[in-house]
Image 1 (cartoon, one colour):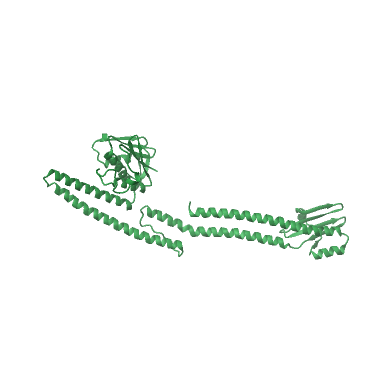
Image 2 (cartoon, rainbow, N blue to C red):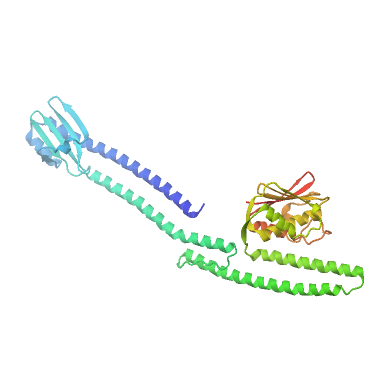
Length: 399
């Protein structure tokens, strides 16, 4: 999960919790304030109602509580929801909210006497309003901080994309971010590292080409000189030595090229891959190979390199089989190379390292499976080994 998604989840959780807390606090304050105001003005209203005949006392109560007498109620005020209402034999007492809920109307009627009194602004309600504003500002600030953090982290997406591009072999990839914070330093550091790696890889490729050229030249001269030797046994021995040296040189160069070369991705079928692999082996007896293409699925990969990997598996199967034919099977997005023989004495990982093989007296230098592993890994495919019914089964799992 990306950092942006994680921060978004944390923000929405925080936003949700803060909203619930704000609503809960507002609900508690509303109930508390309503109860206090109701008790306060209910006491005033009852006091006026009980002294309805004492004009001086009523005037004093109005003065003490800073109430404002009104002549009559407006039509819209008559439709207000009562905070308190009590009916008496010859009248009633009602209290309801006015305006923005910071003023109240006390309506008292007894026979022909009627009082309509408007209260002053309630400080508790104003404090409640200020508290609600602060909670809203907190939520708004949280949202602003979230947007700011997302903006700060947005260059990381670009850096990640460029690093992925660089890892896939696009060595000229650079990150263009001009800032003085840690992300800017990260981008500059990556660019410096990319420059150094690109130079190092180019230097190694040039050295590899030079070494390959310098080694092939004396090998070719040696092969030519061998033909002038009359002693048959010495001639065959030297041929074997130069042939091994040429194979080792080619395999080492191929192994190193895999570290820096760019894959040429195309679409092809499993059958095409198998045929391309067999064409690299120059098999003189086709009866040694049995094909079983049950599923000719499509593959998106580098045909040249993947055919080299499959060719090496087929070559190993032919070298180490107890009997022919070996089987090449295609099914369920998987290509299997099957031969009859003994189970490998060690785990597969052991043979994937360079210069390791089952029997030292066999031909080869133990680089075949190492090359296979590098090619499979570069494609993000999987290499598996199973042993079943006296048969070794090497499988390339195509994702």
